[in-house]
Image (tube, rainbow, N blue to C red; front, side, top):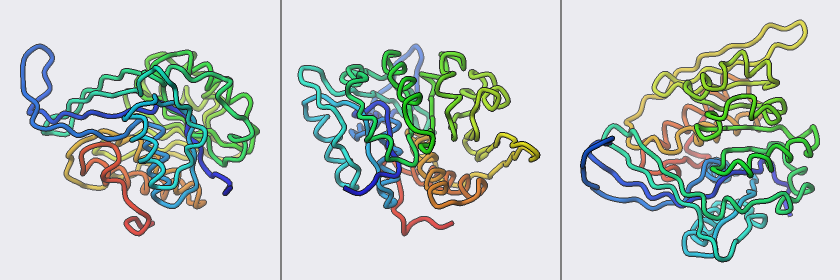
Amino acid sequence: MQRLQVIGFGALNMDYLHRVERLVLDGETYVQHTTRSPGGSAANTIYGLAKLGVSTGLLGAVGDDSDGRAILDDLKQVGADISRIRIVSGTPTGTAIGFVDKEGRRALYVSPGANSRIEKKDIELTYVAQARILHLTSFVNEKQLTVQQWLVEQVPSHVQVSFAPGSLYARLGAEALSEILRRTAFLFVNEEEAEELGGVKNLLNRGCRVVVVTLGAKGCRIVQAANCGCLEEDHLIEAVATQVVDTTGAGDAFAVGFLYGVLCHKDLPTCGRLGNLVASRCISAMGGRAGLPSLNEIEF
């Protein structure tokens, strides 16, 4: 079997995205159309990397149902290794129900399903140890966070940890994520998540080597921790102009481009530009994967 370069560990969901005229807090509107597509943050990133030709695998769980089978088939189509995804009988596959307005803004509601059944015994350490990068994203249930915290303590130092906590984990605060943060080589957060986690300086002080803050239409900011005798790097990379259809999966897509740059030994600004490019392709289509490019569609 080919050695895997990136292994993802996060929730596996089926996304049901409803296009609406506007998002309502207390009111009424109607659904214009619905898109059903496989999702999950780590899974989206692994899918995107596999589509670029990177050897990838996933840790996670799905139910023994039509949604679970569709998720597995979608990953297989791009060559991702699904051999360590647990199929759980009697528990439905996780779902995410989203509402997307005409500006591309969204509201997302997650039902974890089989994702909450992942335990330490489901993780094969020798499988993870082969990777160059372990990419972690959030779960709804904090029990799975404890499994991820345990895992980062077990994997050898040559495995770089990439971490996209998302809003579910960011709201827990930096202290709750400290075991992962101190081991994180590449942290992906948006502006709100960075603030919830105490700011970029706090995250660097907690051990993160590189903090990437995605800024939406403004692009991204990349800050690298200072090494002894070297100045801290701080880069602002402009976004790629595009028409926004749906922002679902934009952060996952950014991680695709950025990590692809890392694997190709590119400098941080180039990684950021690749992240912005892949994210721009993602948000030009409905769902987290439909717009993700193949290798011949991107350039350095």
